[in-house]
Length: 102
Image 1 (cartoon, helix red, strand yellow):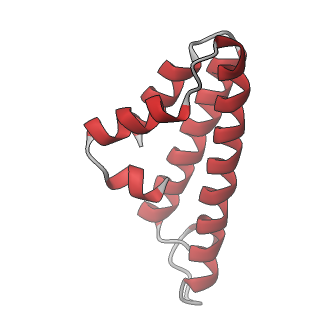
Image 2 (cartoon, rainbow, N blue to C red):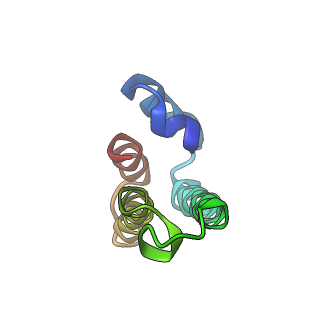
């Protein structure tokens, strides 16, 4: 996910397409499992950055305010993508939108 956050739009869209199976029946479950994995990864990195942060009070939970906002925005966008998929949005479009917005 971290590599995709810094990749160009074309690479992000190809990654979303590569993640989706051809069978329509499997797309929702694959997309939701992908989002679960990305959420765990982002959360682990966020917690790692808190542990690595200096002891001085620099912001929310040891994070600099800008960094805290970035993590919160990324996790919020993951939740929005999951919600969209659960409410019958196209899994492919939800992943594409997520990857473009990160």
